[in-house]
Length: 251
Ligand code: SF4
Image (cartoon, rainbow, N blue to C red):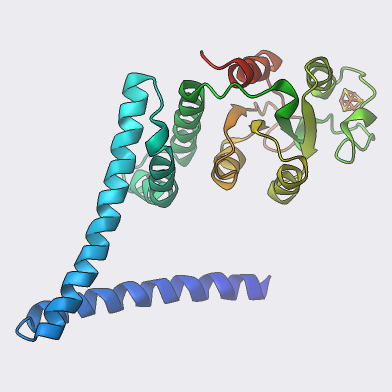
């Protein structure tokens, strides 16, 4: 744990030093523009920064156009995803400064993601869709090891796992129960789904969506009537709706 903290703090400090060094270098080069070599260096640095800003702007613009037109722009999907990933931490910081609740920003991020998957109309075969549910959905007193294999659920009906398992079986979809991001990533690696319906809280869903790369994910928020991470619940209808969107496309 200490090493992890050191690594993160070290990277944070290193990033800050790199940003300061870059700012000092630009300031120095602007002040000493008479030398040709400085002019070239300044042009290269400003060119790279300009290209990055341009790329991010195109990505954001593409995102806005896709939402406005309710239609995907396949050639710009990668750029908009990149812009989304790079700027996501910044939106959280901006939201915090503006006093917007983090949970609301994450919900909005998930909604935008779901909308974009919807307009893409992925048409993924049912058996290539993975339904990923969190362990906290299982009734807290249930002893069956469903993280090892969901078929260990005896279908007593005390939690939504039985209904979701039944739905997955009827549709020949894969269903997995994850205890966290590490297991979820392992399932994605092992199963290699072409699409994912993920059930989780705002925090886990938004990080899961970012981790999944180019695999389309539709996030379904769980409800927490007993507080976070214990005996959570989810609307099976919402999961079915998300599943149908992914396999049939459309709204
Ligand atoms: S429905 Fe399945 S997972 Fe839920 S409590 Fe019953 S046996 Fe356990």
